[in-house]
Image (cartoon, rainbow, N blue to C red; front, side, top):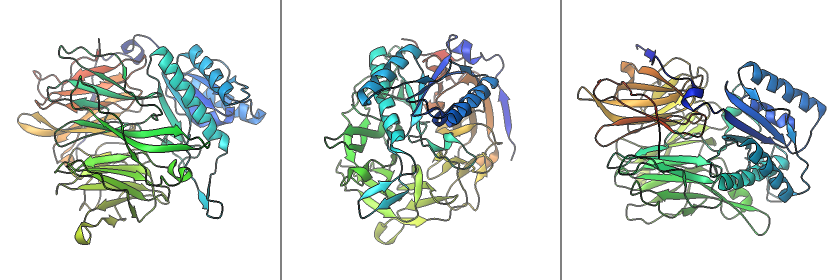
Length: 526
């Protein structure tokens, strides 16, 4: 298979494209040693500030000093020595963290997992057991509270990544995001106007084009307790539906975590009120807080299927019929899975779900192929995805992922003896995908990906024929969120990136030039 690639000449540097503002990253952890893996995530150009709740050990401070020195060597800025807080209780700690965020004005915040995944369960006491100390979850919850307060006060969207303390061997902290990096955050309405759905500390924020093409400012979508993650799925009519998790405190000191859903039926109209789907383990909040991030897809008749990883590390689903009625949560059982779930609409019109295995390299597929339409499992798929990269392909029933061992982008659909590689080992994270973009009368599939330096990559191949070769091009702009693409009903194609400086950049396909040439990057202006 031929692989062709090019970098668009004359593209601006990230700092120029962003107006020269640095990308400030705050890392909030219990102790300095806990920040090491999160500091290692940052590419050149980031300005890093570490905030620790306590001083920790001398050895831990030394390890962080070496990690910060390595970050400086690769082109990051280091905003002074780690800042150490000494809050006496939770309220004091949140207030102190808020003061630090006011001083830093960050674009992004890294912290730990507020609802860690258990490693075992004591049936006698009914208590889950974890391999991290309670202070990890407590610090993450306090960091989220402070981040929400700072965003509400400043009006600036603040991106948040929550990472688990452990990681897959050799893959680092990027492999353990509690809430996945979204690549479906750009959507085109019936009239071609665009909406950007942004995952932030304060939950869902959106920007949209009005009738004149001007962009709205960042608009919070009401919803207290929304966690910093989102997934967008389009229904058969093309309307975007947004799924996430909501975390609320209980009177007994616990927390409830539930799956929530909203939809947009007009680009400049309000979204529907958030609808709670609960969770598969709602009978016990200690189990319920461990729910995985939702994946969803619509069948050809308009039925909605929502899937999550449950407390037992298997898959649960809840379905909504085309008439709007909801079924109860259903447990599929089978192979234990990790958080990486992907739902797809298959060529037969039904919905299938893929998941990365938890206890061994590999993936599983569930499909409605059993007696009477019951769900059946295929646990022997011929590929192993890298964590956080499994995503729907443009074609019905197919998936994209990065190979666990080579990092190659691959395409697979049921029946294939092996996946089809789409490029060399470059870049990181999941891919975005749209289909039906026409060139010379033929339909093409278009992919978006983040390059090794965070630059925006766009690939194209004849729809349904990834084996024919993918033409990759580097559009130059650097994005600190996964780049995304949207295709209008008229065939217009737009690629979006979120560079340093809290801006939103867009590049449209040049229809006059033909092929897959793009115009200059333009900032979304009000």
